[in-house]
Image 1 (cartoon, rainbow, N blue to C red):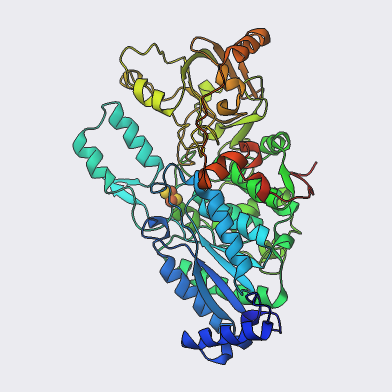
Image 2: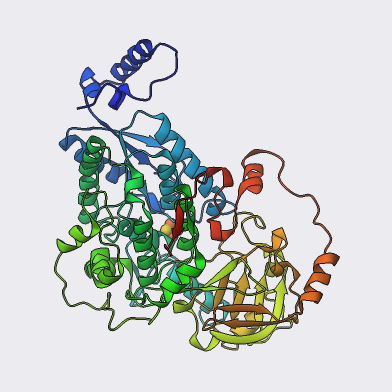
Length: 575
Ligand code: FES
């Protein structure tokens, strides 16, 4: 039962007369066809991110139905409300540019509406981070429900799925290995249904992370979007949300430093997306926790990749589900986890794992004694080219390029890259290092996933599949290659990357965690002094101005400064 200040009696509109505010609200409740009974119920808000522009959320209407059923079976009153929805292929200039706007929308609507708990339905890459950021700041009880992965497709007898295979086939098309007819044919096979990308891209990674954080139900990350398993999880999520509303289980009790450590372990063990590093830094920052990249790298050295998923491995999310999902991964990682971390079930992670289904033979999730990759999927690099840090997904890189020294071939921005990358006169060889500037948080803006620079066509035709590529941008979690990302500070704010010139030598050593521009300090200083201040193209109005004024660098999660917690409570991982 709802109390005097909860349910529909909570968060009254400020008319200066609370009784009148409630009187008016009751009139509108009745106008919507409800009886006074709803005033006695706890209210579970359901964040509706369905959108015609978001196929990854195409099952949201069905999930809302199932959540509502669960809420009502538990005696609560479910009410859905919309927020911004973001899809990777439909948000210009990039969904990352809009992630913080979605987080603000989510936070303020949770704060404003009379809800005692919320179910956050998200899935596509930026939506789950935005929802966790917003809910963390709003502070009300919250539970995450992901939309689930899409089904795989089949192309000429081979299983395919977005988006690792999208990139692989496009690379083959660029290299002249397949023709127009086949690239058109496979285009219709890559996305097998609604739902999120079917590999260990950002959406799948964030789904696994949400479960590891304890903010989503055990076993809820991996079931595909269109399965009965997914619908049942939605019903259970609704049921659980009512219990969370009753007990007032605050989100900061779930999203603790211990929970973030568990999430970082899982990120590494699934060989997950580099984007998740940025998103976790942003969510943690809302709670006063700073991601320490050096300590994260130390964690990476002792956390093997256990899950055999594309792009680092062979399988798809539906295979992970059949193999036991995240509970099985957590079981294999058990000795590295904080088992006392509380979850949305009201029980600890250790208690949940004790009740998890027993292990069985399968070939998707390996034991720690037989990993896919001996150390974590992601390494943190430092050096004069990235004093604030840079990262590389080493598990998806070419082993022979992890220790590499090469000549820089520089592109000043994304337009310059598009103009020259396929120029037959471009001075480029397979051992060179492709450098792309000005695709960072401010530079592009929105830190687009353009860090996966294409192999120049003339080299692709010679059979070159991978080169060292460096940028201040991001790459899709579905991509693979020897690709250094998130170079900080970015070129647009005067980082060393801005001063790299074609012909400079660059050394990458993943073993030593070094990214070094072999140019003397005095010469770099001379270039910095010579660099003219850029023309004033900064946005003057609207969200674009807010973004340019407030966005932080990658290591701080690209959140807005004024949205971060005012009080620092520690680091993740803890020292
Ligand atoms: Fe939505 Fe990949 S485009 S998850």
